[in-house]
Image (cartoon, rainbow, N blue to C red):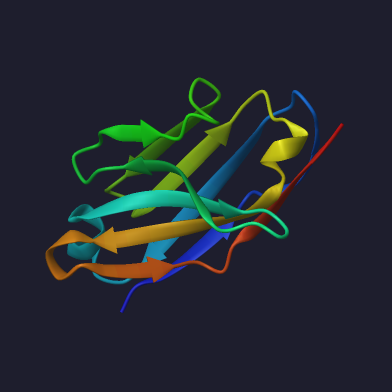
Amino acid sequence: QVQLVESGGGLVQSGGSLRLSCAASGPGYIFSMSAMNWYRQAPGKERELVAGISNGGRPTYSDSVKGRFIISRDNAKNTAALQMNSLKPEDTAVYFCNLYYIDYNKDYWGKGTLVTVSS
């Protein structure tokens, strides 16, 4: 069983930066064989994919964060991170870490961490 715990959320002013972290517990081989993703859900909106990184380390980003956010992973530590720069009020949301175990088409989710960007 895999458990994900996010940290690093908080209140920041527009233009500021935050770094979110996701720690995965469970068999290390699952982490290394999985894609890691960050989703977010703003009040009244659907959850959306923000950034993802393949098990081989290839990142992808939504157009709304491209050039501002950087996703990374450390397979030795079973962690993933999302560096968020030039934050905007519209980035305010609960951010969720997701692990997609490719071979079994299975998703694991963290409980989320709140990011609030003030104008």
